[in-house]
Image 1 (cartoon, one colour):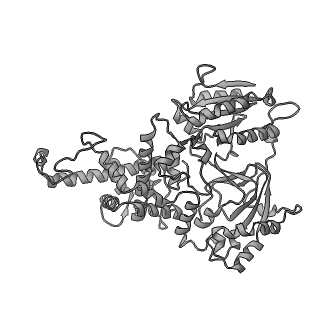
Image 2 (tube, rainbow, N blue to C red):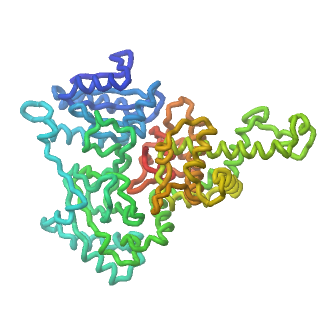
Image 3 (cartoon, rainbow, N blue to C red):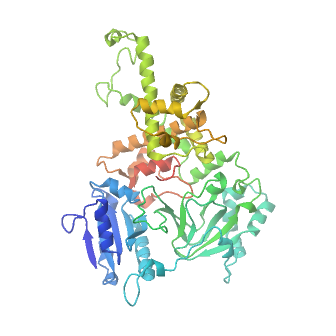
Length: 545
């Protein structure tokens, strides 16, 4: 058993990519267990003695396991690039490829022990005590194209027995409560009971969803990939970072049915799990899960977000007054913390107006134009960084909700910005019009690159409509507001904040919302550190990128 520690006391690894690759190549025949931590993170300090106890556990002696500590200090970009969204986290590598990533505060040590025990049991040969090659490893995977053939036939394992046991719980699920009794009974009669072994993949991120699952036994993990996945160290079977878990009585899969969007996360069982499974076509047309009632789905999406702990309406706690105060504080008024009004700008005093050197009626329109260009430039920077999707009905619906949360002054500014770009006033921003803005701010982008930001209409034209423009401006505005707020709290400039601090600044809001998944912050782990850039995206219902 070897202990590699990333500090000066034992062995310091440079975290440049090729050095990490060298470490993986050096230990391709071993399981590499990496603890990712921050020196100032309280949860990381709480995990350290428990992790060290596992390292020294005699049952792992002489097994092909390499233990490593990876600090975020001075290398936050690399840590984020390997899909770590919370600190502390644990990563498993085997044969030079990433196998698993999951947050692991002190209270989650039993999960680490279980995962490690399962890995040893299934991936290390008992006789030779060597790592079993992936090609020889049999994996249990259930795909949505064949799950209905995997019905549980065991004694007392029929769907009907579980339905009778869980009837009251099923009836309390929001999508079942408004059904007529005859509709409810009809849906239950068509349910299947599926049993998944530990480690089975129930659904994959990006697949089209057509089924709704209710857990009656066991536990599942919600995994999502980021855009940082390195193809050299990430096998096709890697599902991404574990961001949370669902247990008995909880359900998943509804968002894809409601919005028609692909699955936003992968679901993998962490123990023997049984689910009641319902097909979209078996729901009555009046039920939102049938996919036939999407016209009024916006309120249902809000209720899903509320179930996950946060609704977009709660973003208003950081709107209006806080926004205006932040805008005021960002202006130089003697002191950033105690700004003083400027005569002639913040009030009607004319004492300083003559000092400007030009007439006010010339300066004010010019300043307003600069302000609008700055707003659009911030939005453009956001688009370059996040490549948002246009033309997607689910994304458009979500952004429209954000537009409604803007103050009237913000909406007015964004409307003026749109009119500034739409030079010919035809109600659409063309590539040529957008090109003028890009050139004016000194960005060097080819027409091909700019086209990637434009949705394509049925007639083949690529333009940005007023609705799409207002939506992406609102999304960029809230995203930047979140980031600026969180960065002000990040004294270490690490890119991570304690869950407790995030909870406080959001006025009690503590869950991260996204499709098909819940929070990565648990009540007992409020000392864990969260990647607030990803947190900001999840608050807005965006995919991790």
